[in-house]
Length: 315
Image (cartoon, rainbow, N blue to C red; front, side, top):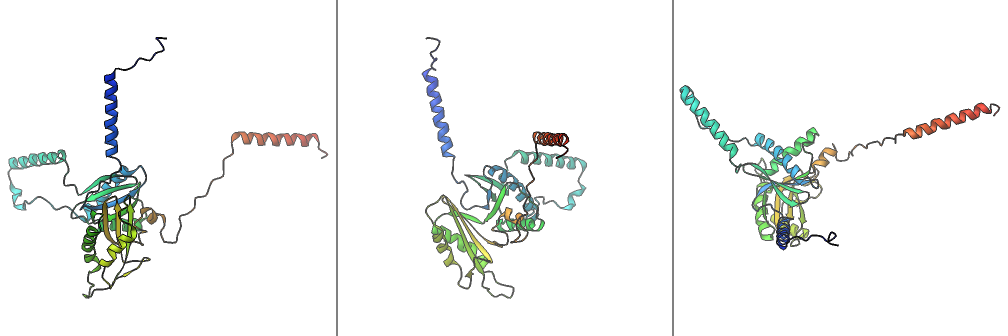
């Protein structure tokens, strides 16, 4: 009977295990499902495949950095003139050593001034790429989608949609109106070449995730009065689309062109069709391959029928 009894652990060890499980579960609950995009930030809201949020963020940071270097080349920090080219060899060696030491220190130091960085949102199928001045998210995404439309070559593997975010604010009607008025004036009130103020078409595209404080109609009613009366609503082919994405208590807003041309800024739709009405080519299903057992069976049946024919030639 004594061998069958299980040896119980000391109470101190059991106590420590319970405390560890409690605090680990508490940390997991605190870090789960919280939308971590900060206020007053700019960047790109990314829709991606489920479970591939970090992979999508990594590939987009590389892609955005490449485009940002082309569109917004960094200014040179070297203020030296060409008159200093006649220095002595000792001074050149000292400058060379100093430059190497400076580069090493920059590599070791944390990259606080990184122009493109990723923010893990802790929301499934969503990630956020934060950008800094002078990068303009609308121009950056428009350039990338234009290249994808022209070349029809995928540049990403896990990304589905790129939504530029000019600014973020609190999901409150007053805050949203203040932000919308700042974003709409440079676009909708821009004069034409002759100096006149033309009427433009627009559409409001709101979307609410995990937030019950505002509905779609309330968002549209909040933004529409800010647009001048000479502009009119056109949902089919608007000149500009006002994107309002709300997740929890964070509102992400931007005014973008070519919303329908770029298939609602959906990468898969842009690459899937060259024209709006051209579907993807269907993949023909191959016929099932016959197994060796079936071939042997057919061969044996054929031999058997041949033997019967030989035995009964009159038939």
